[in-house]
Length: 173
Image 1: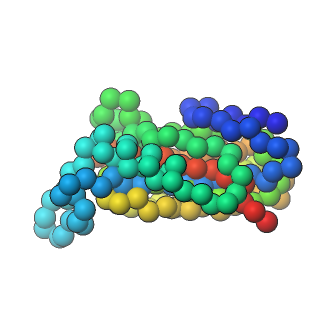
Image 2: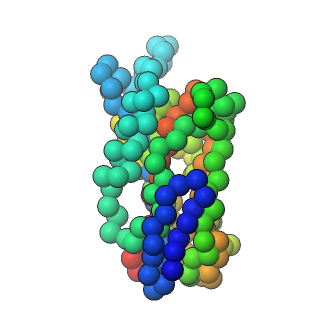
C-alpha cells in the first residue's frame, strides 16, 4: 500500500501499519542568533537559508519509533507571502489511513508563530506555537477510531517568514 502526500515525499507502508503524524517546527541557529530577544530590543534576524537548513536537520534527525508516513522537507510560510516561494498556508492531503494513533511533529525556525493541524478522518488536533532560534518539536497526536483521509495544515499570520518541516508517523500502540 503506498502513501502519498501532495507537495512532499512519500513513504511506502505495509497495510498493517498504524499511521502517526509528527509535525516538527524548528528554528535555525546561526552565529549571534542564539539568544532570545528581550523586551524593547529587536529580535535577531536569521537568514532564510539558515532557517531552512535548521528545520531540515531537525526533521531528519528525529526518530519517534513509529512507522514513517510522510516527511516534508523545509518550506517557507509568511502572510502575506513576501518571500519568493512562500505561502500563508500549506495543506498536504494524504491517503486514507487505517484507524489508529498518529503523531505529527513540526519544527519551525524564525520569529513568529505557526498553527499546525493534523486530521485523520474525523479525528483532529491543532496547536499554535512560537518558532524558536533552536528547533524544538511541536507534537500533535490523534487517535482515529475510523479510517479516513490524512491532512496536515500549517499556517501563519505574521509577515515575517518562518521555515517549517514536519514528520508524520504511525504511533506504536
